[in-house]
Length: 559
Image 1: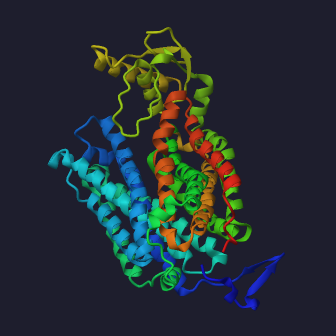
Image 2: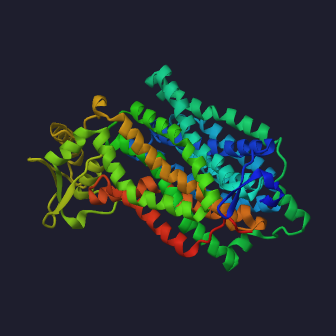
Image 3: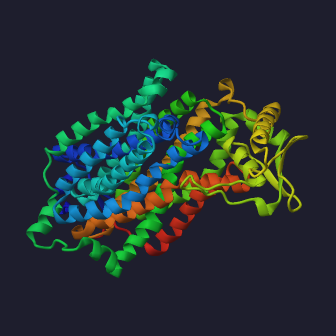
């Protein structure tokens, strides 16, 4: 970053023993922020589209398999994109350190945009059979590869086009647009679904949001072509200080590899889990567990996202004043301490009838413990056939919380709701299909009888309190992400910065963020507690705090 000593003294204000510059961003800096943000918007726009349109995607691309497996595969298909991100980070990160930030930036946005647009025109399973889901997953992988070089590069490009003293504030504008991707996806999907009607939208209208990405692509290319190369990259190029092998220098030299590990387990483990917990898991929890209708859920999340937008900028400003490390620790601690009580409060204020049912008619699963597996299925191909797994999976998918008690070995699992008992079954039973139909019908009827499974009553939803809770949960991710990515930019030398940031950023996002839904679901299925899946982001945030405290150095004033 540029030396802040060039700022005239009369444009500074003294606060204690530190000097803080008051300045307006230049036109070039603003243009750089807009150009860099477009990739972030497109990336998260597509990411949330896959989640919001998972039912339609499953129907059109995975209709050759059973509906449940198709739905799971559709939700988990974005994991393929996450897996490709670290490879993209190494490929495009290397290009960014060798040939420059600008040309790499142009390539990544073009590839990412073409992949997203293509998803909207791919033929369905009925037209080309198994080639349809294969092509869909390939597009996800291609997009993940491009994102690997895009996302970290956005922060670098912004950071290297201005003075270090307000780096956090400038980077915060780019981080903030990540929530803008969610907002844009909902603002495109919801009106289309409403005005087209459910039938037309499910049939072909779901493709339009993907095709709309062409607008973002063209605008991004237009504005990026107007930009110049990063001043810091031009400086090290002129000095002959560029790295000849940025990947080897990043991973083979212990001083840099140590920083990569701190970035993964200190910064990204907390940032990825808290961000996706606040922006994505809250939507799942409201709609699937608390039975809040989709329109209300989307409106609540949109409103909370808009209202939380200033938090990103405040976090950036604070990181410029007190340091990245302090803000990062504060955000992780807030997430670790308050995520669980806030989700429990969400149940109380969004669906009080469910909270009453849990108290008046608790659900108990009786099963042979040896039959109960940990249902982690990131590929969507695992088979859970025991009576315990069938019963617990059914309850978890229905968003019902339960406690377990042991049965004698070999006995078939059963569910008790209040005084009513529902017998389970095994997938190996000769009449398994008939038993499954009977079990599912009995479970739904009995649950409804005791106040479970009913849609949340709109008149009972305490909207102001739900909004405040969502804002708090989103804010944790906003604080950590803003301070975290600013620290990442400053941790590594310019000569390997693009590569060195991209690897931990996308490894962390893929491992800790990409599998958050699958891991949380597995924990809930194993414990029977609808809140137990939250221990994953809570634990990740707590471990990150320890790594940051003991191994991360403050980067704000580092030269």
